Amino acid sequence: MRNFLSDKVINIKPSGIRKFFDIVHEMQDAISLGVGEPDFDTPWFIRDEGIYSLERGKTFYTSNAGLKDLRTEISNYIKRTQGINYDPEKEIVVTVGGSEAIDIGLRAVINPDDEVIIPQPSYVSYEPCAVLADAKPVIINLKAENEFRLKPDELLNAITDRTKVLILPYPNNPTGAIMEKEDLEKIAKIVIEKDLLVISDEIYSALTYKDKHVSIAAIDGMQERTILINGFSKAYAMTGWRLGYACGPKEIIKQMTKIHQFAIMCAPTTSQYAAVEALKKGDEEVEKMRQSYNQRRRFLINAFKEMQLDCFEPYGAFYVFPCIKEFNMTSEEFATKLLMEEKVAVVPGTAFGDCGEGYLRISYAYSLDNLKMAIERIKHFVEKLRTKQS
Image (cartoon, rainbow, N blue to C red; front, top):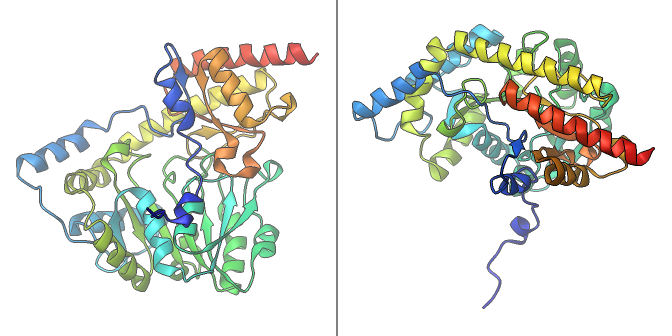
């Protein structure tokens, strides 16, 4: 029998995030600091609306683009947080998480061999989705000395005649890096000059700790050349509800909705009703969670300083990205030994691109008590390694 599998799919590496957590589930007393999932329950008023929608029998398909009420609330949310106007009828599509929005956004705009610029370290889905859309990924290796921000010269050096899309992954997973308005204005100038499209993944936009998040779509001349992606998983602790959205030019959203229609039909109906309530009444709960994450962030940064482990200060998302190059071990070796010897699971930086070598992603979407226990174990592990080196 012939091989029925796609060479393109076979050649895509599996995600490097899950490997360690399959082990953790079988390991007694292990602490996992790897999965980017809030430890908060979805706020009750959001759950109640989901339950109420079921009680009312709201279990049918919605329109392909999503509930009109939800698209209206998304439009209102983007207006009040970013000052951008999107037509809920033509410029918004509701998706199965932000991940689907990334996938269909790329598929809607890519022709074979178009180039997609992907700054790394960054979310594991960008490069595979580009490959599946028949694009050529062009990687920019971000630098710790630049706080993992995308610099104009780095972008210019990556652009060719085939470049069509820039993926902008800020606030960043795994580094926690942000791009401020001044940074975005410099990038926007190049994007306009070179006639590029931006896919701006802003799933962590509500979780920033310095200044409020600014979308590149809010920069002059950029709304018409940006697909803004966001969702409910991180800010509203709704990971399992699987709900996201994309906003952008109506011509692009129309084609994204077509792909969504054939592949998905519509996002989960119960989740959509709950999300309407989240956007209407959720700002206070999001702020409480943001403050809690900020407390945990400050705790970890201080803990790494005390153990003299190099780590730049992140101002977004809920991750830190400490450097472990001093130990002359690969990220995977360090993470494996830490798990086996101290029962703490973290993610090797290489899961997010080759330039993540020498770093670890540690999530602080976990309770402060768990973080304190984990830090004691990491401190003990680091001390052992330094003793062996001396």
